[in-house]
Length: 430
Image (tube, rainbow, N blue to C red; front, side, top):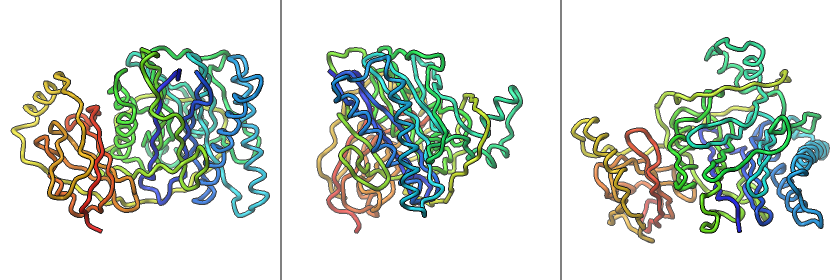
């Protein structure tokens, strides 16, 4: 019996390439390993560092649980320490073989658990959160210059210009050096994973201001919500709030009834380019570009003394298809109608398997409709605001034929409506 449900999602965002990698697996009955790595050091170096570290992690965790003495709660922490040590050695040897990769590195935040207990390890500025009964708790500590300023000057407001100038500088990383991770709980032992608890692992692209936590989208989570929809909603929200980085999340939850569930993925990991047994390309595109201001996050961080390392940064302009539906009779009326609709909990919808530009897709209610092509090279995410429950597919005439995944978010507050599906568009523009 699997102990948790889990799902991961990563996008290139406004960057020229995706240097993030994610991993979420169940190496044995009752065991789980979740990880997010954010590469740095140029396009080639960042992709190599993050993907190679997660390939190593997959092998290390698999080998540990396949051994004659598999891990226990008492050996989870030493196992993670050894993983980070071997990752540093791996990258050090890689640079010796390929000197052109000098300067490569990656963050790594990860969770290793057995049944209802887990430990967390972290190096860099990727994060792990736990959501319990509506409360969001950051379990990791950032290794950043900004976080160190917060630690040494508690209570002093951090200027937005200072964050913009120095928010990308991290003070520890996996780069072939001697940096070591922090393990949590800091005092030793393990965290409890209670029924209904949600774990979120993310790269720093999820919080555009580089400081505070993505609390608003997480508060939309409920114990029975769809993790795939939640992951996509979090990523979409960060992108539309102005994130200029790659954006990656892994979400996992211990269900209330362990006797009646199956994990979304038995093993599903993602990287930017290469493919191995466990590390596969996740073909999802960037969410639509938006002029929205940065999100109203809330949170805090601390960190050790800095040894600055700067991430590369390039921009990516993403094409956007925006459709404005029939005018509504005032936002107040619409919001009230929408709240009433949420309370009715309508039945689950099943999208048609194949459609053409002459068809109409019934998604059940007016909402913001986000359709992501499974081949992100071919087309961007399509965003439509609907005033009725039907999507006229001739509005996709500029999109190529192919398979699209869709989900709905609230036009009032951008929270997920828990509705998703897929369709194959047979007649699109090539």
